[in-house]
Amino acid sequence: MSKAFLRLKDYFSFDTRALALGRMGLGLSVFVDILWRMQSIDWHYTDLGTMPRDVFLSQFAFSWTNSFHLMNGTFGFAFILLALHGLIALMVAVGYKTRLFTFLLSMFTISLHNRLWYLNNGGDDALRALLFFAVFIPWGEMWSVDWWRKGQNVAPRKISGSWVAVWFLQAFCVYFVSYILKTSPIWRQDYTAIYYSSHLDLFATPLMKSLRQFPLFLKISTFLTIMLEWLGPLALVLGFVAPRRFWKWVKLGVVASFWGLHLGIILTMSIGLFPFYCIFMWFFFLPTEILDWFEDRCPKVVKLLNAPLSWLSLKLGLSPVSSRDSKGLFYLSQGFGVFIFATIFFWNLSTLKPPMKVSIPFWINVTRWLHLYQEWNMFSPFPKQENVWLEIPAELEDGTSVELLSGSSDILSSKKDIFPKMIPDEHWRKFYMNVADNDKLAKQYAGAWCRLWNRSPESGGMLPRLRRFSIISYHHVILPDYKQSDLHKKVIWNHWCFEQDLPK
Image (cartoon, rainbow, N blue to C red):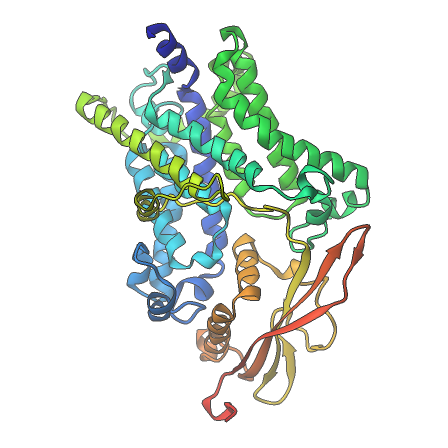
């Protein structure tokens, strides 16, 4: 039993250099995400925007909605919080007082996501979980400002324990739960799932649009994707049964396979930072032997990696520090890790379909209050099979017409081809998808158009003032053999900006 335990402990472990690489990637990714969000502060994070705080709290909030972004609804307050958020992300990336700033980054991320969750996607779910877990692991021990402050005397080491097990479980659930939920024949028999997803113009990149002309390639891609989501997670968690000399190749093979999957997604689909978060998550699983080989063969790259950390430490005049581990805190942390392991396990069981579904209220409530809830049902049980776009034809106060999203005076021609190009980032893409299915949200979005357009020109408003408009969704179903259905039109919401124009 002792040998078996040591074997498991050795396999389910992380190298602190791998943790450092993942830390740098995730920290910089969050910083990029904040830069994207800053472009839409008025729309998403102020009382003039889509979701004023009183409306959100009275109509959209849940009991577990915790967000200090709701303390104030002004542009300045939202800007300061986002700027702090970005600075904290950079502190995590360079590894300065890493545990403290990781905790702050986790709290800021939870608060930001709760301010308007109609912007969030699966990538945001993954990010919240990864940052929460990272608070309890030493991912700032190597290749960080903290490392330089300790005189670079800390050698790389392997860590194990309950939090490493939590990371293994999280990586397993992201893909294996997604595999279980992909029950449609287009995934498992016809292998046409990527044919349909490739025709979703809202997501398809130019490369994807060119590749969708090759049906055999699309079928092979579908088969390889579903097989990787099935076998990859199993190989990761069961790799310890292989002889020890093969462990590094098992882990490296799994990591490289999922890197390839996410690189393919980045090249072919516009889904924001989700694949980047996953790529950096997989850095954690790099085996020690590969990292040793990397340091031996690429010393210049390692030196280049550490150069900005050295410069920052010297420039700030940071004094050396010493670290002391408390055994009591260590055991408390490991016990909490076991609790979180059970939380993630039972939550993911609750997202499955009967008869595999297991829903236990206690674990569901714990997951929600800790904001570790996650859904891995993208393109499950099958990809969306319709192209959707929005148009907002409007009338201004002087009687002229304009399509609000494109700014075109031509409100009659179809905006199907230009709509995907008008979407600034993944958060807006997710928001528009929600608006197309939710007239309650469309009403709030319409109100934001009136408030932001009709404010004073000195505050960013437009003249002539906006009088009335309609939010309209168009869609057509994607059919087999490169065909599509007739166009369908739906008026989601009609809006008047002035009370005197309201129809009786």
